[in-house]
Amino acid sequence: MRKAPLTYVVLALAAVAAMLAVGSCKSQYELMLESNDVPAKYKMAFELFDAGKYNKAASMFESLKIAVRGTVQDDTVQYYTAYSHYCFGDMEAAEQAFSSFIGSFPRSPFVDKARFMYLDCLYLNTYRYELDQTPTYRALGAINEYLIDYPDNEYTSNCHAMIADLEERLDRKEYESARLYYTIEDYKAAHYALKLVLKEDADNIYREDIMYYTVMAAYKYAANSVEARQRDRYITFTDEYFTFVSEFPESSYRKELDALAAKVQNILNKKQ
Image (cartoon, rainbow, N blue to C red):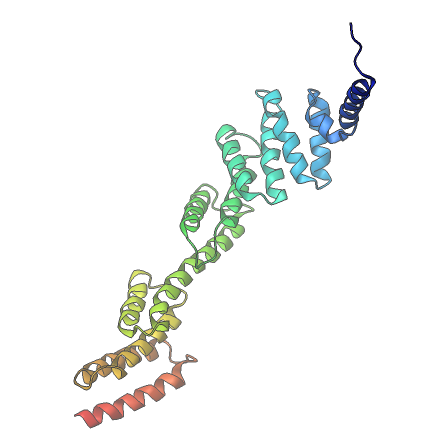
């Protein structure tokens, strides 16, 4: 039999050595992640969590799920999988993991906190007011359901703070969307849209600003109208002005609007 050339032998040995070197370079964490030693993995998962290495802790807890299924450690592993994702800042993974935990372990001692953490994930996954607010409505619905079940616990004040922030975001979106017509100088559409915001949500926290722009839109719509239509439209402005000052007599907008009202009154007097 012909012997393999020495060069091939050397290359083969080098390849084997390289593979052994790669294997020997694996960290203790990587080796434990692949291990079947459940107690050791469980211990390391908490050591990683306590050390603030949340991404690695999440992976270690995740690798334990099948091994501890049906045991007393099952809910602990699933809860800390979710909690590790949360602490690492992966809110989407945390939201899914908390949702799964709540559904699987409704009587776990961790469930009260898990339900709140799930809400916090929903809250943190919402967007700025100018973007899609579907996640905001979803978060609000879940928070309100939580408050029905837990009307007074350690997380109640947090929930109310979330609601206030989310509702402010929705109010601002409605306000800014209507005001956009004013910005682009479509004053007729602005007047209609701004009034519609308050018709649908009288308690909008931007009520004063909305009413101010309603008055201003009425004025500019009248001022830019043909003369034959101005009188009626200035009267509409005057009505909006008196509605505003009766509700906000001390408004910072008052001086500006008073000046416009006096100007319009002079115009109307001349048109009589």
